[in-house]
Length: 211
Image (tube, rainbow, N blue to C red; front, side, top):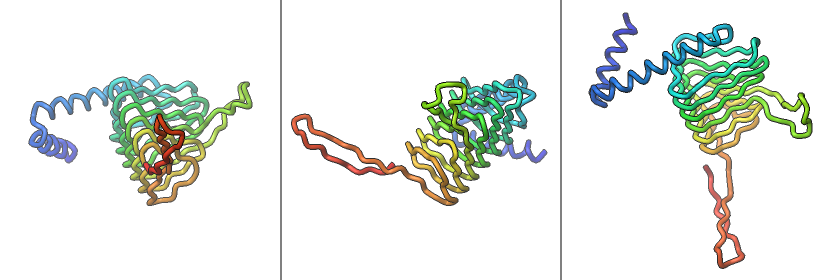
């Protein structure tokens, strides 16, 4: 009963801000996303453990091994064109109320954990493995783990590599490449240098920027 009351209050408040018509469209989108979430849970009923979560249009979960496991907390919301791929004995754990924006990719063959209330911007890639170009055969994967804490903000176009731990309450700046340990309560920024060269001059002008 408390949940129903909360839904009614939230819907009324959103209707005042957005308008009734647009609030209905938004809620319809949520319901469709929840339905798609249940479809994936039905397809991979042996692999996925979850309650209510939403996956919008063209987002998908692909599991390619009977030993792979996915745990999704309640009220996880995944926007469009996201891809979760779990293979071998991979274990993907997503905490409750995690938000994952458009075009994100998660590739898991070992273990990836995303803590509750974490927000992930568009075009983020998270990988717990990479490829060893020196070993072209079947053992070409270098495997590690990725752990992302609670209440983390991850900016657009971030790449998170294997053997990375991000502590609670961190902010990862847009465009960063993250590998290693990011302590709790940290703003992580990759520093870069941009070079601009005049077409009529051989000299280059370097401008330091931080994203």
